[in-house]
Image (tube, rainbow, N blue to C red; front, top):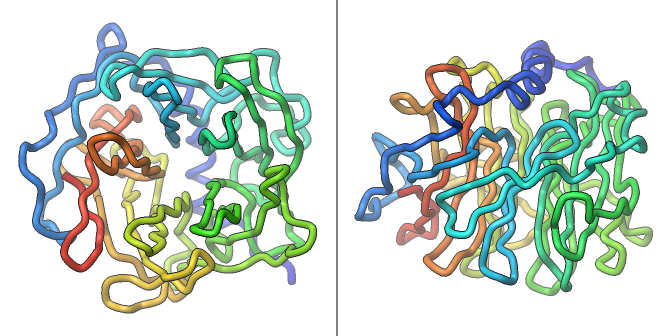
Length: 345
């Protein structure tokens, strides 16, 4: 079946993404200091007001952040931008630029980027003694998209090896192959969730030996969609907690600066393949989702979230827009209420 044309909001979103990702720093000397984390945890997921992001300093201009905890206990962040920018931190507070994944460019992606250097929405993790990076190549508003894999023994700029194409999309399918996230289930099986607009969020099985798509199970499974909201769901991230799988997604409009309406939503399932339902029991494939974080005060359009387990608990990473329209790194602790639903604090 031929997919519908890109929604108008998706085109606008993609048309501004590059400019926002590569714009110069607007904070003085590249420093961004935000309100500290509240001392106490919230009591549930349905909050009248959300906490501000925790304190972050240094090079904090990011879009679509993903973070891996290194074996040394430091942090490595990858983000959308030209040749995939990298940042590092020793304490999860002070961040510095660490070059890019591809200092010499990534010519194997240019068939999807129309020759451009901007690559989108990387997903970084450390497994089996090396770093895995899934990332997207596309052009604004296009369904002609692809997800590639790279690996590195150190995660350092220039140390990455191209491992090839994982999945692509075109008008021949009903999904868009961007916004990847690697998921390893309780049995050790690898999966990749991805998707943006069109028919929503998908899941494919991977071969753990290669990190690429399974040749024995090529099925594309559906996890979430928003048929009554112009398809506005993207940025999936699956996190396993307490024996359940939580599918975090971003709803609504990214990349409009302070006018962005992005917000973080979640659903839960007993199986990595779904079905995922929200707190009220509504399937995410029917537009369901329980809100975890939304814009408040001078924090606009928080989204494209990632979660890691750290020594002090679970941590949520995301980007948001300041009143100036610039996008910054947001970090909050993630708690779980008595019913097993996440909340930020």
